[in-house]
Amino acid sequence: MHNSNSWTWIWKIAAPEKIKFFIWCACHNAIPTLSLLCRRNLAQSDIRPRCSTSEETILHCIRDCNTAQSIWNSLGFRSAEFFNPSDPEVWLRNNSSGNKAPIFLAGLWWNWRARN
Image: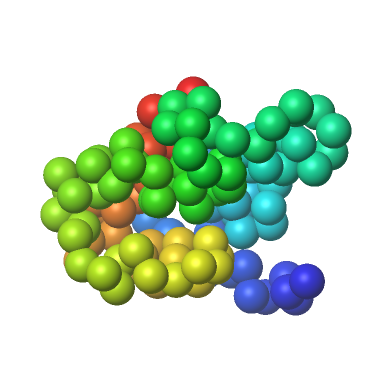
């Protein structure tokens, strides 16, 4: 587990509190994806119903699913580097600052809301 100082970057993001809280939950593996619910015996399957091909992890929901990738592509996030880090915290941290951060944060929320 990281020390509490390592999470300060989240609270410095220029975004609504609900998005910061979502990012914090994602970094702490506290988003109720089917993968997490299945591990806790609260769901029968961890396969995402929308695409029926992959385990529903947080990265699959917000980045790797075909639906999510379509949203990212439409927002101009097309490079291989954007889809590269396999650690949700690294991916979220890398993209939550800089010129494209507002677009990224909106896309992040849009992808999560599209799941629900």
